[in-house]
Image (spheres, chains in turn cyan, blue):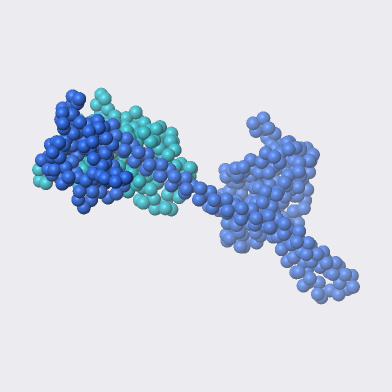
Length: 182
Length: 404
Ligand code: HEM
């Protein structure tokens, strides 16, 4: 994946585990500055190696790390140069998710070698949102879970996220908690 | 003619306005309803918007009757929003097909993706610029690091060059002190003046020790400056091993150690740098003896074929104090070992092993170590039996240390 994803993972690791832990991890897993160029495309294997190394250092499973990374990505993107893009994407969770494809599309016009996922909002109500996630990759469901959790937090929503495989992708359901109470 | 209905137009141009000839806004697209948090239909255009002035006199107008007119309008209010677009006239109604202009100002942060026509490239441009500036930041950061690294490297090479060139200046007076002290001791002994030779012998020992230290430091400096060279020649490995063992015999006996040599064959001809091999052996056997007392040090010499290449393998095994894995780890780092307790109690710069390692590397070989605390250590020196005569040119860049 693109180096900006690597940068985010590194930032998360430094913020959570500290500079020293990061330095150790980078030295032992063989990561250096050349693995973190925003506009560079790295093989997915390299990206996963980074996630796995962070998982080992943090004493988490790879899936837990992916999920944490998903949550982190949202705050990271908000604070990054892409902050305005994030803000432009919508004022509610459902609106944000509906515009995600267009946003990734636009990003792809700059980062031409990306293989972007697709998110299609199939149903949205006060009680729940159904989103179909499609990707060329497999195994990133925990990452998507984390991203959705991060987005819910961003919009001040709470609720539960479940997912199930569908013929055409993976269907995520966000069940909003206290939709009535609010 | 426009054949699209209102909802289709809303999708295509979320920020659109329909203005009657009177100036009254008849329709405001969904973006305006959201952005201005009120319905402006029915309001007069001039009460809500301002046409930006033309460069040369007069305000821009959308009433020129042209089919399409580039148009810039700004909302009135505390945090004005900029729009850009074109006018299309049908049946006396003017359709203003607009798009926000996200200029990075706080106001323009109110725009959402949904405010832009799908045909509008403004967001693409915005993103391209952001991606561009992000990679520029990376590049700047990297080149700064590169400049720093280059400067540090240059300083280090300069330091090493200086040290290497000091070699002569340091060794000459030391050799003079040693040589003349020996002469004076001999002269005094001949003249039968016994009393003061004891002090002079102390001077001699101290000076010899100092010379050894200086030699170590300068060797390392030479290595770092890339000035250490190898001169391969026809030689006999068995002879060198026996020779070094013979020289170190007295040192072994002093600590109650047995020094044994096991040769695969009485002669083992090859093509390598005899002086470097000798220096490595003196270091390895000397070290083994230093850390062993009332024990045994064995030096074995054999030939092995590795990847169709003949290698000489010299193993130096001792029954000394041995090392923990942490100590082994520190062993070959310049200046680290020198500060450890071991070096402190046994003397020396602690650079001998680093130099041995580098010498082995220059010979196209390696040094490895296996050690058990309290049991002893085995150091293994491997080097090609037949060096290429132009081997100097192909020194491998990576470290030759293999910790087994
Ligand atoms: C401004 C914010 C964002 C930027 C710049 C961005 C950019 C990217 C980039 C560069 C990739 C890598 C694709 C590749 O290298 O092939 C990616 C992947 C991905 N993005 Fe985004 N993204 C953003 C926000 C989001 C958000 C908010 C979500 C929330 C759901 C999201 C979901 C994903 C997922 C799931 C992937 C993994 C690719 C896959 O599933 O195959 N992204 N994004």
